[in-house]
Image 1 (cartoon, helix red, strand yellow):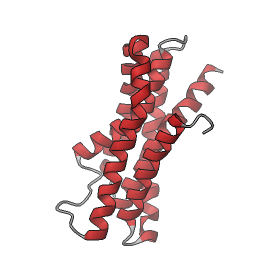
Image 2 (tube, rainbow, N blue to C red; image 1 turned 180 degrees about the horizontal axis):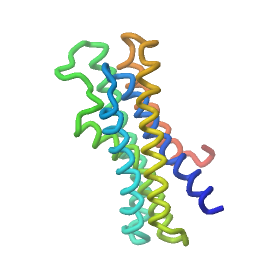
Image 3 (cartoon, rainbow, N blue to C red; image 1 turned 45 degrees about the horizontal axis):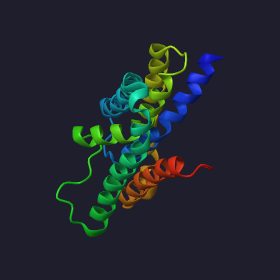
Image 4 (spheres, helix red, strand yellow; image 1 turned 180 degrees about the vertical axis):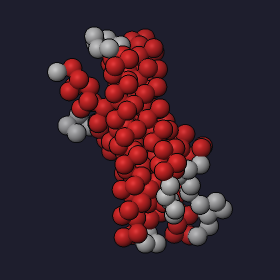
Length: 187
């Protein structure tokens, strides 16, 4: 039963990273295995490490981290998404949004794994194997993100020319979803 619980938690934590992977797949012109692996590794590693960091931080800082994590994700994803939309609509992009850029992936991986940090805080008070939990979270995230890149790439042509706007709206939507889930008790 514990494996089922961990698996369901992992899928829930991976949902935002999967959505960003689909958006990244939209933007990649020539898909190759190594590009999908790079994106999946970033998200998988961060989804593995953030619960560990949360667990280490433990009870002492739980309330502070939980109080601001959703705001950080909202701001990061909103800024990235808004920037994508602005550049797509104005054509003023000095450098187009590149989902394979290390600093971009780093920011996206952090933003989508802040909920995993909060989950790690929760793991510090319940009796679940940390190693087993973070391993399953990381593997499920890696697998879903790897698939997400290919799904996004496959169906990105359907939105020819509007991919950057759709991707930007998607990122802003994910940030808004994270914020609302934490601000509104009924969501």
